[in-house]
Length: 179
Length: 307
Image (tube, chains in turn green, cyan):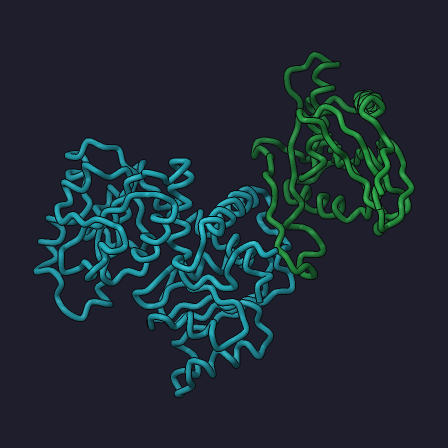
């Protein structure tokens, strides 16, 4: 059973709002860094980056992609091996004393975010880490982690799956809940 | 799903193309980890790895040990020189006793060909071959191939010359299997006495004249003259070997090609390679050492679920 909970135009409105909320707080040029979380947070992070560039007329902003595979807490419990996706973290990018905004598509148990924070600390010591997520599955958290910026809060059972279906060039998505 | 088709890494000949691809992709990610401030990941926390070395080693042992530490694994080291092997304990007894201490993975080096396979067959642990006699040294071949892959993007159609003591070299065997699998062309160059019989049946060519071979090569992997494995004279004199087969600036200049130079180490400077060639700008020798840690991290990470 699959139900659409957000369509493409609603999605664009939400992403637009999230971009504006970020711009109220961050410059992404000198004091803040936008970081997409592999694998699926990267599309959203890139979309927000493009929105910021369009809105501000800037040519570049502090942006990186991080993969948390090596830092997961379930590696020793799994039967399979996870191969990390490409990490894009320029060695010149200093996150020391910067405000970092981590971007992921769905905040579920909070475990990915925890391992992403550990991965971030291997690169430096940010002054603050914030979290932006499109979907906040608020009743499924296993760790004390919450989003600073969120698109919508979704109530879903743990046997249900919330997923984004992106269009071809990753500019819009439909969001589904399925059991 | 498992990341590699094999439970062990006993030799390149057992690997598939997709395995090498997984190893290279994971190596690239670990190289990024090694450039960070904190070069350690918690991926193998709680796993114990034993390095069992029946032969001397500097680079391979240090490289494995550092890779294990970077992965947060616990390590126990075994060296035959100060062990109960001297009291007459058998190979299998030594290993099963180490395994009884709850070891999940073994890194194995021994002078006996096939010994890594033997241990893999008789124990339940994952075995990584770090060199068994003159048979294979798969992690060295993978790091050599990765260094070339990094430099050239692809190994397809690349002309790689393997120069030196092919007969006593496990690195040569593993390199041949690995580079062939990745589509490189391979030529061997050495005195005929150091060429294994029937080796050209593996799809490699042979050229005795180094000057001719250098005209063909894009990369030269220079192998050490393994004096400790040579129980007879394979060439008349050191001077004669140097004159014909030592990689010197003079011979390289004659070929007028700017090829890259590899050497698995340890180097006999002045014998198989001139000192200035080893230290030249187009030498990948230190890249090989650097990549060695990342390649071994990738292999141990990918094999960690196979036990």
